[in-house]
Image (cartoon, rainbow, N blue to C red):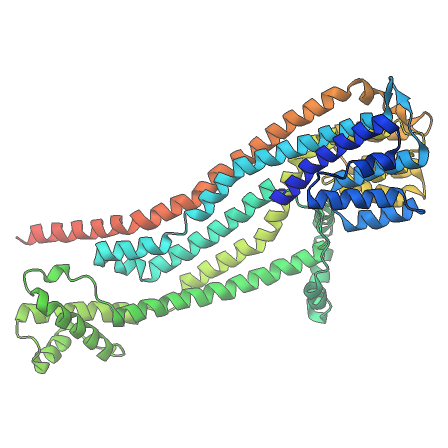
Length: 536
């Protein structure tokens, strides 16, 4: 999704294009039209306008275009430069009583307007979704403190192992959903990464042997995965992705084991340092004795924590011998509490089923990178029709230029492509070794029928002119813009419909963090009340 400054620059670009169009109508000189249109623009757009002016007035236009395109990511600026440089080099002509350049500028304005509207809609729909996803977890610590302050008995959950596990799961789920929602709302430019660390690990002999063995056994799957990675613009290879999945799996396994071991440590610490639930002592001790009872429970728990063969009577004898309390019922209750704490303390160790849970988490994390690849592929497929419609608009802008070739057209389409970018790049690379063969291979790589129609028309350009081959676009040009608007509306709404229920998962988890301990404590107190009634 565009940042605020990028959107502002695109809005400035609309003003700039309108001014260029107006000034070109007056004097029919593209360089003068650009120069006269620089006033009143924002700083960033003015800098780009000035750079475009310098490029088209330079002695070596082609060289300067290559340099300029290498420094920017904005495809609309590249298209604007392409239109301006084409007129500068090859002059203008009239099509249907309209100058081609001014007509193309108007079409470019429509493309930019469609993109701005799409980005505004995305921003509007996803701003609330992102806020709900993130804002809901900010009071999670306050909820814990509030719960313990209102009901000290809830300390077993909020300050203990269950609360810690619940908070970590909530944070991980929230981060994951935030990441998914960002993927849904953003069409990021393809950035090629070197994956240096994966390459270094890949070169180690025993790791290389494992990877070779896996690749040989799963050759067909790896071939399909390699194609998917290329399609979504990932520079990581299928081999490196497998290595990455193994690393993530091992890290998750080790982290899960350490985390679960740490939760046992937290519980042991709480058993030796915290006493909150003294509700069963009501009527036996007064408010002044509470602190003494708490201190005694912690002291005797700490004293006997390593004793294995100990019973409640032994603890009660020790309490009587210390002559701190003299009430027999109180001594028995303290001994019972200490005995319960000792049983819990000695039971706090890493268990076999926790190892199974750690392994399960590791298996999930192993599949997660691959799931994200397929998720990204799904998002790209949602944008297929919009991209083909945009291709048709670009072709219409370029098809009447006498100097344009099929390869030039492919290069222009590649600038705007996301879904079909890799396919177009491969076709451009193969084009010089056989144009028709390269186009046929491109058609075979893709299964989307509207894209096939474009390729078929490109193949026809071998026997007829480009404007004749794409005559159907000329007849239907207005509908492409309208169709793109409608498709953008549907696509954005689909993404928002996926993101909305996802964003409510952290809300449900936080509500569970608030309500679950209350329910558990209520059930406990109901059981205690039921036992007390039965003992009457």
